[in-house]
Image (cartoon, rainbow over the protein chains, first blue to last red):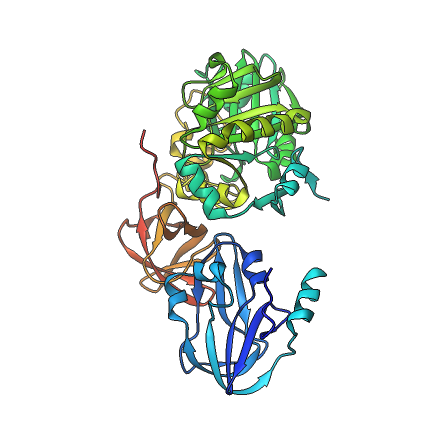
Length: 124
Length: 362
């Protein structure tokens, strides 16, 4: 399992990268592994508001659907349209396959460091 | 408490992701559902189906009993052959669907769904007639399913030719494969050619290891429940708890081929079937033409009017499309017509299509 140290993580298995006031969000390698082969992603639209702690997207494997919870509150500036055509990109590299970029961030969930998230996953 | 099949430790050691299903702890996948699905369509896969239940129906009235509690007609079934049937309740719904194997005169081996085994056995006992003996032998048997276009080559590598049933839905009792006693039938739940092999529970691991080892050169991989479900869906085979239920008529589920209302005896459910002719609800295939995945228990709308609900659905790997099955009002069922499915509040456009989604070339 892969835990890049430059990222922050949530207990709901999203990752977050903050750069110049923009938060890029995706799901962790642990999450893609638990979900299995992903076949569909439903993303919000540019301009939509996302709220910390609430679902903003969902991912579907052959067997299951999972909500993706936003780690931040803000406005969707950009979505990764490649995922709409090929959800398997998330299985290939969960950290390259970002979901959304969020700006005007006003609120954040409690975030874990890579070490903390790895330790958390070992207890699950 | 969940039961474990005799192969539980084998699945865990092989990295199977374990879930609860039908009261058993079984793997939902090993490495990848997609990979397992494609292996069965293109080469071969091996499934642990030891959770399935087995019930012996014996005695001088065994045939009359089967013809009374099941919708199919067993009168002309011969020893060494199998026949599928729904088992109906007195309200026109379905208790279970099952396969009857004829071992000999007055001697039948019935295979039922894991989650229904105790219910079925009680149902059979409650409706038993004189001259019939019923025995629940589910705990004594292990079962593996060897499925896919290479299944016969793999079996031929380990089993004597006389133990390989040639016809679909035929079976050979009292086989022996490398010293393992077993029953081999040419049946399956994937839409591919293949075999279901029954052996004493304590021989299941030996049979599994033997087939995995000898099947490698033919592309055989272990497969789990996730692929079993997507394979049966692509082949449009009903699954109890989805297309069949206590309140779903087998006629609605598209099982007319296994319902013989003209057989020369009464049977449980016959009156209700005749009263529902033509059936008011029918199964239909749905292919997603919009964006999304449809799954079970989602409402189906045509021109804004609710016409039924989905019973199964996912992304089907071999046809590479999101699709599913639904039960809809007969008058609204029209192949080619557009419908919408309510996917967690989002309307996803679909088209009604003929089933199955996949049929193998013979």
